[in-house]
Image 1 (cartoon, rainbow, N blue to C red):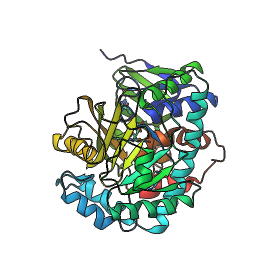
Image 2 (tube, helix red, strand yellow):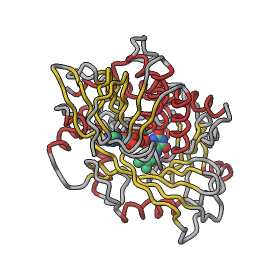
Image 3 (cartoon, helix red, strand yellow):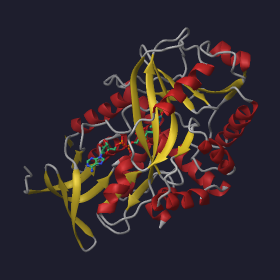
Length: 420
Ligand SMILES: Cc1cc2nc3c(=O)[nH]c(=O)nc-3n(C[C@H](O)[C@H](O)[C@H](O)COP(=O)(O)OP(=O)(O)OC[C@H]3O[C@@H](n4cnc5c(N)ncnc54)[C@H](O)[C@@H]3O)c2cc1C
């Protein structure tokens, strides 16, 4: 039964993934009264089973100069790291149009600057929260190894490293022998790589829960099992948010609904170019030699993250429209790629197979800012492959905008109006 009483709230944040919880905590601590809601419990969307990397060295957006030919090659291969289902529709065409326009050097550098700023801020924030000893976030400041088994892959790593060095990212090049000496779980198929010493990893769901606990300790309120399905508007204001557990009249509404944001925004007659980048992760622990360091296997775009007693293997990006089906062939491609480079036993037991939808904007930069159409609506979504590693920085930036402070980084890259 729906309760039709309208409850007034100061700030209503919809979506309790890592983006919604970090922003809820930041806004509550900045003096606002926040109600955070989610249709499930907190952290069960894309923030649940991601690779857990907090790696500012990965602040390259998807569209990059020269990416077009490479992506076409990947897209032809159903086991390749990037895949678009042959299902052409208007939303995909519009997204691709913007995506192609972002493949310039100038746009890429603007995105890298913005993403590096919010990622570095986040790494420091996670470290600080972990140092309180209050939460089992499993923060591991062990750096990151990027490896390749092909000459062209090594060239790509070098090019990326050179770009990231301009943004203060430290790295050390390794030949094959040095890579295997550092990480004995690697097979001799590896030709070399680069080590980034300042990066870290965390356990993703535990990190969402840590921020939720911080938020509640500051007096904020979370309500799960509450789905938004409609709005009531007047002139340029959203006056009511209609949910499965009653109606709310917020002074400010924040959409932190990740990959589902385009659908929610459509109810508000706003057309947003956001697609889902479906990826998978698997938890295994059957290794002859278990990995010690988080690793990116560049040729297959597989992320390897050591955890307490097991390893998470994550990868693939399948552009789709919030389609949550699991494609066995693409899950198997992660295992196949891992076998090629890692000392993984032939038939490893898979403890968990997970799929997640990365919220993908065409330029790889989140949309953070006020809506042009609705004056009390703020967007906080589109964090693509970097939502975990950039969440506290994104939350600080959004809070600065909402509370009228000068943001600590240039707001133009994040402006939601950039695709209009
Ligand atoms: C395989 C894989 C590996 C990844 N690895 C990394 C990594 O190592 N590091 C990194 O930084 N990022 C990584 N990512 C990306 C990262 O997971 C995402 O960027 C991030 O989780 C997005 O967070 P979010 O809060 O925006 O979305 P979500 O976590 O999906 O949260 C959105 C929430 O909104 C809720 N919601 C939606 N619609 C409604 C509604 N109508 N009413 C109420 N609630 C609603 C959902 O229930 C959900 O809880 C990875 C992603 C994948 C798929």
